[in-house]
Amino acid sequence: MYREHGFEVEQGVAACQLSHCGLPRHDKFRRYHKEFLGQDLDEAEVEVLCQSFARQVMQQVLAAPAMPGAMETLEQVLQAGIPCFLLSGTPQAELSEMVHALDLAHYFLEVHGAPVSKTDMLRDILLRHGFEPSRCLFLGDGLVDYAAASAWNVRFLGIVAPGEQSQFPEQVPTSAKVAIPDFFSWDIWSKKSNSG
Image 1 (cartoon, rainbow, N blue to C red):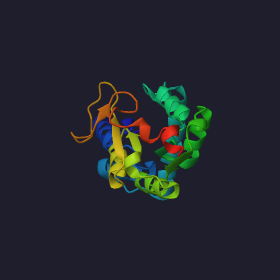
Image 2 (spheres, rainbow, N blue to C red; image 1 turned 90 degrees about the vertical axis):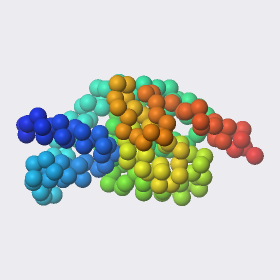
Image 3 (tube, rainbow, N blue to C red; image 1 turned 30 degrees about the vertical axis):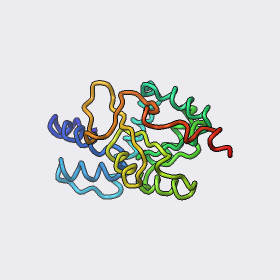
């Protein structure tokens, strides 16, 4: 979306996108225009950019293959009876539309999108469901995900696409595919251990 502003701006926005992955796009557009173009956007301008971006994202998401390991892991979690939640910086209405269009709704107990922050989403889920943070696992591909998990002492696995550089601190376990890591015990969530 920033190609028309030149290579440097486009590359700068792309680099920021990686470090701000998971932030609501309204905030991103305001930040990128201010930082790279020296422009303050009003609400109407932000909304036009968001609508255009939403159309592009929907087309790309529906055409894209799943992340490596994602479908297998979702099926594994579903079969194990483990509650699974989707937290995203994508606006709630768009996220719900995507989840249904991709036939993924049955994998998730709840789906949460912007404008609520992931930190607040996670806090709400932990409190409403009475989950012990040490018994939970957050898989995420952005620093916003890691920050949300860290804020509530939830274990975290960073997903780093093959060939990409990890943006996570060195001590954070990462994987090139979506999977339940070895350090996370399935026993704490198994139906047997929760049945009495």
